[in-house]
Amino acid sequence: MTAPLRFLGGKGGVGKTTLAAALALRDAGRGLRTLVVSTDPAHSLGDVLDRPLGDEPRAVAPGLWAAEVSGEAQAARRVAQIVDDAAESVPREVLPAVRAHLERAVASPGTVEAALLDRLADLVEQVPSTFDRLVVDSAPTGHMLRLLTLPDLVTPWIEGLARSRERARDADRMFAGMLGHRADDPDPLLERLHARRDRMRTLRTRLRADAAVHLVLVPERLVWAETQRAIEALDEAGIPLATAVVNRVVPGDETGLLAVTRAAQDEVLGAVRARVGNAVEIPLLAGGPTGAAGLTGVAALLGDLG
Ligand SMILES: Nc1ncnc2c1ncn2[C@@H]1O[C@H](COP(=O)(O)OP(=O)(O)OP(=O)(O)O)[C@@H](O)[C@H]1O
Ligand SMILES: [Mg+2]
Image: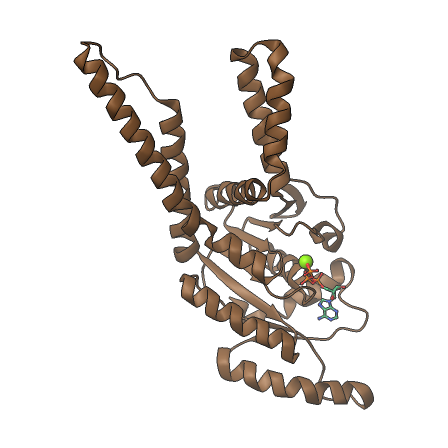
């Protein structure tokens, strides 16, 4: 498995963040310049890595950088840019109203989602120039699927906007020609639309060609049901699936309550093996994988993950 873009996805609480951090640590240890990024609004990557993280990648270990990105931060950055631009062209007294209007627009859910996609496109564009590998600690299943398929929805929409704008410009040109004027001035709006369209097309292609999703699950019936739906949704979207990770598997030699738990897990494990074949199994670790040593320990168990 050589996909440079890895997404860790799965139901809430199954171990995505822990495994994303462990995978990134392992890859960095193999000499790959690795960036691990959380796109989950409820970030916990910084807690797992025991470092405060922000929107910009920070070095956290040799060959390893980490960030916690958000649609809100990206949208706010855009607003700041637009207000800066507007400061040049809009009267000073109007600026507060422009800012207030943009800030209201930023709060709308569609804007935040689109901005997060934009940030993801930014990061994907940095592979392979700045990073060899991008590991994404995703939000729980539904959000991840939505993010990964959003370029498919957004691209035709931007194409439509660009076409309308092209038609409007062609009509302007025709009238200008009839009046004997030349009208081939640059059209910044159309240029922005084309740039955005190309960016989304590239992201859409790269999510099929260079990306793979490692679904993480714990061996419980409800979690497995959700995982199967995710497998189908990813298949349908044409996004490659990589080796799944079954986390918190109770060791086979336990007794008492844990033995009963393991017996229940065995049923699910059988179904998982039948469906996805070569899943990597991570044992239930007493007290959880804590600290750097805990993460290194999990990283060492990721052997066949590719
Ligand atoms: N193999 C394991 N054995 C024991 N505990 C584990 C194991 N893997 C993860 N944990 C613990 O399970 C909890 C949830 O893990 P984590 O935060 O990585 O899951 P998540 O899928 O990212 O959750 P969320 O959906 O809330 O983001 C953490 O307390 C973590 O330390
Ligand atoms: Mg998490």
